Amino acid sequence: MSHLVSFWRNAWMLYLLKALPFYGKGTRSGCTVLLLLTVGASSANADEGGLSFWLPGMQGSFAAVPTEPGWSWAALYLHPSAEAGANARFPRGGQIDVGVDGRGDLFAFGPTYTFEQPLWGGQASLSLLAIGGRNFASVDASLTGPGGGAISGNRSEAVTGFGDLFPQFTVKWNDGVNNYMTYATGNIPVGSYDPDRLANLGLGHAAIDGGVGYTYLDPGTGREFSIVGGLTYNFENPDTNYKNGIDGHIDWAASQFITEKVHVGLVGYAFQQLSGDSGEGATLGDFKSRVFGIGPQVGYKFNASDTTDGYVNLKGYYEFGAKNRAEGWNVWLTLAFSPAAKKAD
Image (cartoon, rainbow, N blue to C red; front, side, top):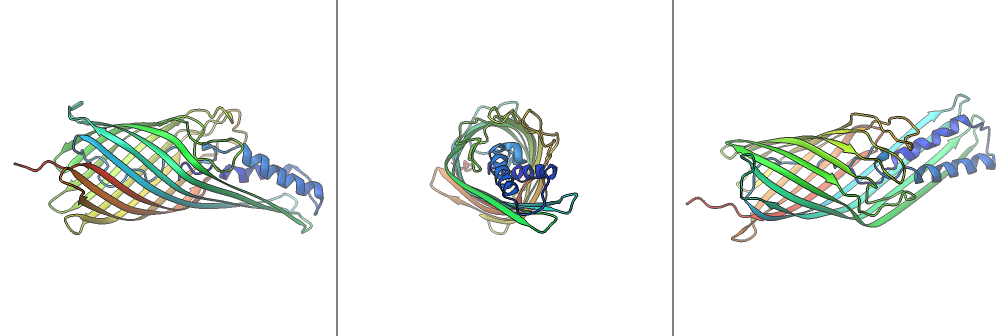
């Protein structure tokens, strides 16, 4: 769910009310809640809220399998939906209830060029991915005082546009049924971003990410298993003076071909922030986040033409175990075209 608005931290801004006296329906207290909703939401709208540069689920089946040299093209549709709630009791008996909700309809697309000349005994490729679409976020909060009086406030926003750019470099090796890869990618912060918005399509800061992957693929049995792990280093957001910590992530997929062209299986991911947030804007502590996801997948390989192979994949994730991060579900639909495999003479 990375690249959704970072709205989770907005809820925690309301916890500043713990330091304020509150005994009833007073107008001054009501204005304080609405003010914190607005200021809190406006001060943390990038990666700060536990939402990451790395999109958990980005890698899947056949991740480390080399492909044919030449140009290929991929497009994917991602629909994330997540929500989170929190509550805290005041020492004098009051309570805050906060709900945050985010949804997106995002499209990623871009070319990849795979080199014919080997590099380090493997196959190198370069790609560039862009993101566009619509993002929606909302925050709702209610405050109940010790005397039973209650006040509430809410804010919601949507944005449509383009996000950041993501270049990636990979090298892949094949050894029979075993396939290996290493990759390096990053974030170029050129997307639609405003620190005063709840919803954004850009992160507002740069990031670099690198890792390794492995795919077991046995054409004889039709079994496949892939796993990719990596680390993300985030640079400081110059608009908020906030720097997210180092993130660790693992994507995995397992599938079985039920026909020559169709495979079905499971996918999953694990995301854990390894070091705390920092910077002048990190006023609420290190705020480490985590989330896990698992779900089904189905894929279909087809011949688009005499010179082009096609592949379509549909997968979905149910998220659980979230900490300092919204959780929900997301669906991915991927369509890719690449040079057709050369037929043996």
